[in-house]
Length: 541
Image (cartoon, rainbow, N blue to C red; front, side):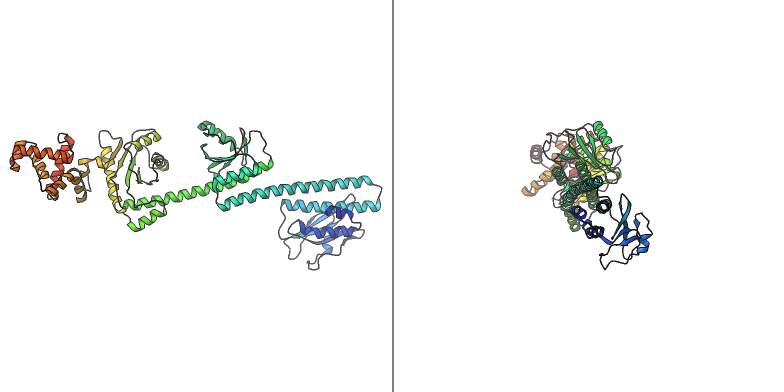
């Protein structure tokens, strides 16, 4: 519409004034003044706004026929655009702005200047050489070309604006990876996916999702990453358009579009490149959150192992998504030749990933310590860890059940004791539970009265309770029997009972305790338990 209006004007001054009125429609620009070339030099076209700062006309005359900046009070950027035709300079259009225009702004202003110049040239041609219809046709062709360029740029700008707005909404709503792939699919019409750096699928949007998802070999995966890493933007690799999410140089994920028919155009590449930046920000945010979470969890378990105050410990645990009101077990893992670094810790985490609740985990020296709600199943964790690390030469110690936070330091000592016994035994690899240590539970350093009482209750608890309820002396009978070296006659004499009475009592002891007195380890543990019960605990029931 503007081009038709310009070319419909008969007077050159009307053309310049019309162009000045439309400068502000192109963006944050203002037409300060317009000039026409005359025989006497430049002549200002009347009609500009009265509020405009004064323009030095003499300075404009000194420009010759060049374009360039014009110093103007209260304006950050002012530029003199030359209006030129076949015969040379036809005038100037003086435009100002708060800041220098971007590439698109320069293009739009240059297009307006070109249209204005063409219209001025047409009036000159009409006045001097009305018979030159060929020049008029050329000018009209230039006008049509400029209009088509404007239409193309407007369409591209609208598409890019749609991409920006869509992905900005995804980021603002915190939709995550699934929202990014869904937006990418809707914008391009191609199925979109996200993989981790190892080729495992994290998100898919659109049709054609493979089930099961194919797993590439490590060699193929590294080759794909190498090809995709050649360029900063998207790269075509085997029917896919691939972009790497690598903020700060760290490869965190792969964003791709399924394009087996090679239909992707410049708009598709732009959209994928913009989504690449959104994914990089999302994955970096997730990594930072994970690092903070790991640090908070590690600080919590470190404090619990040292004996943290119960109320504050429970509050901190709840903030970390961990319930300390449940029963817990302390597990200590040591694998010679594997320092307790991040890779070893990750291996332990993967080996214990079968638990419904993630354990709290920390490192101390060359050992990894876990606080978990579930008791490990025999050698299941050891077997998984041996497979993960590629060597069976490791040991795990597991504590007894702990029912409150203040018991965690004791459980930690139990797990350490179980680990020590395992590593000093003939079979030094495997898992040892403190429950199964028997006599070894009270032979280590740091044992207290509670530990001794627990040991006695484990081995003599049923007999002690039976004696209390029925006013019998089964524990005393067992103690005298061991003191006499298992001799029936000596034990019966010491107890002042008949030999048959002793046999009856020993049979009742077997039935009530469910212990095999003929087993060597059982006899040893029972004898130690009766000694502790009589000498250290004073025969208390």
